[in-house]
Amino acid sequence: MRFHGRGGHGIKTASRIVGTAAFLAGYEVQDSPIYGAERRGAPVTAFTRIASSAILERGVITQPDLIICGDETLLESPASGVLNGVEQAAALFINTRNLEAIRAQGKLHVRMVALDITQRTSDRIGKASALSVGLGAAAARLSGLISCEQLGEGVRTELEELGLDAPMIEKNLLLAQEVYAELETVTVEPRKFSATAVIHKMGYDHVLLGTPSILAPGNAEARQTGAWRVERPEIDYDSCTRCGLCFVHCPDGAIALDEQGYPVIDYDHCKGCLICLEQCPRHSIRSKKEVRSW
Image (cartoon, rainbow, N blue to C red; front, side, top):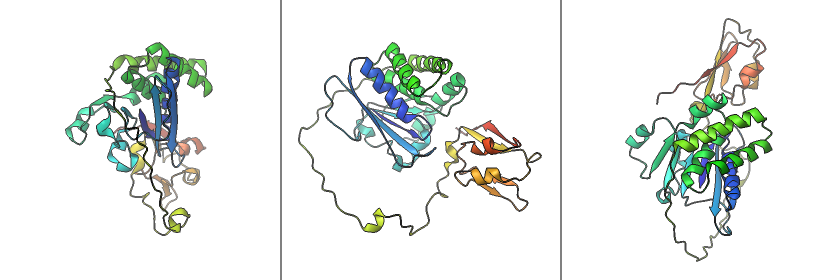
């Protein structure tokens, strides 16, 4: 199975939860993540292989049996790789509350399963930044290989390793049970794979592609990353003293200063990290749950 999400969603942990639970169920397991820029909001992919015999294959999964998508906005970006090999998948799971709108577009010819993991995580945990347990529970249930009890053991093992306290682990266990109970197993048809080895010849690109040379402006401005938010920062200008700390500490340059020196948030590119809220000495910045047009 292949997991897709963004930095901060806990995609790597979701993969590990499923891998650990499957190992406890007696299977051979392999799980590994892959990501580029290690930053909040950047696309992240993780892979989990489960088998009843030794797993000899390594690397990325190009023909997944199950695809777990933790952020529906990734479906709009071909570069995310969510839909690579989707024709071979038994199902595509999407963390969304509006599956019918996605189906209505008629672009995805695969069985789609959906559940609003974000809302359930927010209800159970009090915040919805980390979706690892919910996504892991969905994958475990869809696979049909892992019982709810084994899933719980996997969740506890991984969260204890991350240092979460007992009350928070218990909340996550309840979340895992809830998600597991709401989904059904997907039938994965066995495949026949060729034993013929494929050798890929690697060419060499121009040296400029392998050096940190900046030859053209980037496309960061064109990519409206504001859709990644769960919460949005809002400024109370009545108490703002124009100290500029939010402007200085914004990691994405999404805060500018107007002619009077007041901070202005670019919501097209603000990812909702809320660092500005933490840095404001007057607590003039508050968070508000993001509301999207679904």
